[in-house]
Length: 276
Length: 224
Image (cartoon, rainbow over all chains, first blue to last red):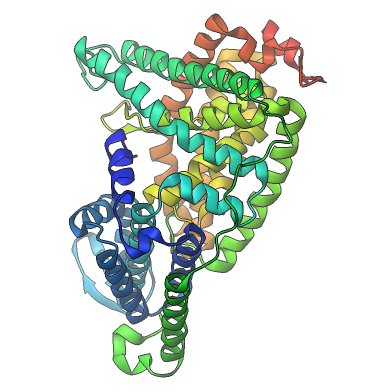
């Protein structure tokens, strides 16, 4: 899971200025989801390679740090990487390597693993890009504008506001525990006692969250909030030329890739073959 | 337990999304009825708190570490699996959108596993057990079961997606989450005991009514 450092780092990246940062939040959100969905749909490695190149180009245009982007992608890979690592050994097919204890690597398993890893890298790059060019609050507003139910959109928006506060709260509690030499992973301390302390920390966080929720509710009511209240929204912003160019280029790229995938990519051998 | 993008085919993702939307519809309906206009700030801030709680790494017996999910805790505090669906939907959406923890196309599957299955298993096992063994032992078993069953459902989904064999998936997910579940169980109970001492009014079993509705079984649970 992510710590307070990564949350703050994310918000700092979104404060940079570039053509992509200034674009309408809805366009950024929809197009990056569109790329992820196409990546999951695709079964050819070459298609995913082109999508990744396009995303890297977008990262370059948006002045987002390549170093921090790669670092974030690498940190996220182990979650899926663990499952992918098994694939060459568990998929039936043509055996290309036999190791100790009768372990066998099949060609189909290996290709499937490469496909899954390629999809995962494209999806994670999209998420890293989206979260680096769109402030959380902008994404929340985009969801509302795109028709997310009022209650869910308000919960989403409010939650983002309080996320930072709770990270700070947790950070303070853990700092205080550390100052008193508490280490949850210290095996010299009885396990039961450590769990009790952690349990109280969680209970305190839960309690503060609940009580904060009630306080916020009271302050919202005193400012005229009711169950019929709605978001304050700017007047509907019209899409500009840059947004239309971005939409056009992305859709054109996906259409071209799909046409090439069906007609020419098979000539590229392993890279262009359909892996199902 | 978060399934990433690319591991489940799109048509199966669509099915999980439909299930998630239906679950969300009923959860919102429950929330409107039981939490009134308090719903929005309460669920939002609680989700933020659960999000922070999930970032705490805890030691597990035999060396490894894990983090709490919180779905069982929410379901038992509110005595409603709907609350777990709502809170986990928001938490998982933010994790998928900003942190790449769980996929966006797999969001439906992740909400079904952790929110719907996790919340429902916690609620129904708690409801089924508290009369026989008391509320805290019941909460511990419910929390452990909710995590364990949710993990096994992930193994089934990965098998349906053709990504992992069923026997290996069930065994590996089961063994690992059997240990992680210990944390979920201990912490759920410690939090419930603390809440019962400090703010008993927050626990649904201590309230006779909520939003004008009688809470089913609240008196019996409180007495146990």
